[in-house]
Image (cartoon, rainbow, N blue to C red; front, side, top):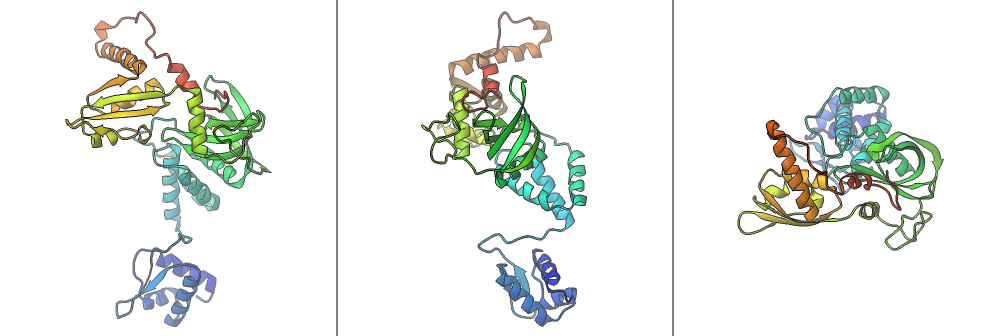
Amino acid sequence: MSDTPARLLKLLSLLQTPREWPGGELAERLDVSPRTIRRDIDRLRDLGYPVEASRGSIGGYRLVAGAAMPPLLLDDEEAVAIAVGLRAGAGHAIEGVDEASVRALAKLEQVLPSRLRHRVSVLQNATVPLTRGDGSTIDPRTLTTLASAATGRERLRFAYRSGDGTRTKRQVEPYRLVSTGQRWYLVAYDIGREDWRTFRVDRVGEPYATGARFTPRPLPVEGAGSDAGGGTGSGDAATFLARSMRRMQPELRLDVWFGAPAEFVAARLPAHLGAPEPDGEGGCRLRASCTDSLEWVALRLALVDCEFSVTEPPELVAYLESLGARLTRAARPGDRHRPSGPEQGERGEEGERGEEGERGEQG
């Protein structure tokens, strides 16, 4: 193989297989001399690839971990496998899979040949997950479009459905994607409303980048005005989202006892609720604050699958009592009767409406 760039790429592809390659075997595969292999190894080292060599009759070359992540060469099957895995994780907002996975997916899909993009789509469409997260599923293409626009500082247009069903068209300057473990949110400056907004990504439809570039505005920080998206300094997108959600929805202060070890309970609760503390008697207690809806909190507590009792807040205690009564009636069809009054917590609808938006944005 006389083409040096092509030979280096082929050599790099071989070295990225986790094994040690004898110099003679590499020379045979590339149809060059061992001396040429040694020169090519030196070229790869100059490019930043950490290639180690061992001496002796069974010695050879292998690529090892270095101080930085070098470019990787993937064959078709590897590229498809990685893209499908990233799509599955990003599309279901799995806890712990954050914006980095979406950025990786956007980079990978940008350079995938059309034949491989088609294979990824076919495999994704033919696969149904056994379980789903608590949040709504999202088309991964929506996430990659938003991520690419935020990274490239390119204005976006999309259709948006608010919590009450109202549909609008938006043009925004995307700032960051934020994953809460349950859902994905887009933090962006809304050009039509001349202010910052947070958008639930599962309610975003038909997003496309306009091609118009923009200079990022400083994200408002706590205590800075934002009547026109202003404020001084640069805030953090996750902090901005959390503040926005707190403003739209009252905070719940939880005090819950579980009749199981703290490790058992922690493994079954979302990380944002914090870690329970052992009570010294085989159980544990969770004291935490959150802005989730009563319904969601009640469901997650029940899914821990052990005995538990709630001391605070009073509205969660009342909701659990009404939910327990309804579940009991569901298990005893002969005892069904129409409830004498509404059994939903007062925050039932508000919890869903208030999950988005800085300065009164309801969707």
